[in-house]
Image (cartoon, rainbow over all chains, first blue to last red; front, top):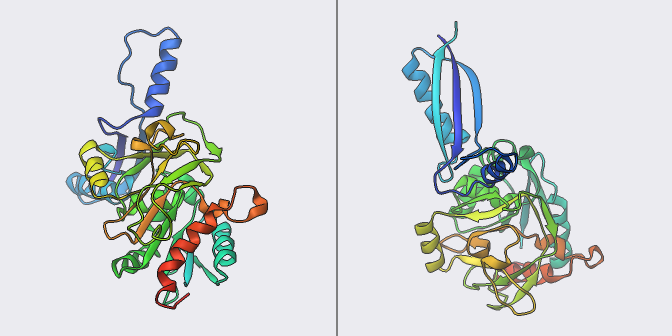
Amino acid sequence: MIFQAEVLITPREGVLDTQGKAVEKTLTHLGYKGINEVRVGKIVRMQLDAPTKEEAVKDLESMCSDLLCNDLIETFNISVREKL
Amino acid sequence: MKTAVIVFPGSNCDRDVQRAVSESLNTAVDMVWHENDNFASGTDLVVLPGGFSYGDYLRSGAMAARSPIIKAVREHADRGGLVLGICNGFQILTETKMLPGALLPNTSLTFICRRCHVRVERTDNKFTAGLKEGDVMQFPIAHHEGLFFLPDDELKKLEEAGRVVFRYADPKTGRAGAEYAPNGALNGIAGICSEKGNILGLMPHPERATIPHLNGGTDGIRFWNSIAGAFKERGAC
């Protein structure tokens, strides 16, 4: 089965996110109020072929620990849906 | 001292290191493409040079840390061989987990390229044994991701283990610490070593402080000689 996957990678809590801070400051300068804790991350999208959705998630978790995510400074969130 | 410089796609300080080491120590330096499985046997020092390996895609050093040559670099280090990572090379070493921590974007969010001073904090490792604790060296920096980060408890352990080798410093007073770090590095850390002292990573560029007419000073020469000192003792240099 072909799956459409999305891995969302964001800075871990407690890790200084200079980009997030700069974006927060600029949004505030633009007049937006009540903004807090802005974090800037990245999304990795891919299609992958796997027998089941569970297998697809397992593969993606392995990819995260092997390359996509540095667990010292980042966390990840995986979402997978069957490609129609 | 037999030296190998690993060249990754996007390395741009590889030839600077080659020239700095070969001219300072009057020795040949091998250039080794990252897709190779190994470097020459008998290599004493492996250098991961500065640059923008793989265009800094994903995270600085992330892709290079998974290059075929890294297995041999790791084995070399496991045998007690010397591994030096400069700037992007330091980032690569943290990505391989051969050194702890991560290099985050500078607090200024700008690329900083300028002369800089670091204080030698420790000399009980294979790289700075020929220098003196408290020596202040002028090495230039050129990076966007140089903020050394480790979670508090691990940072404390690293400090207690005496593995912080270089700290950003004020050349006039000789004081060193976070307030002198141009990039926001925690505790002003510019370079750290492995537990056994045979792997060193640092953000500043000693190879840019080696050739006099480049105007970066010549403190790098002392650094290369310090490394070579370990091998001179056994008559191998």
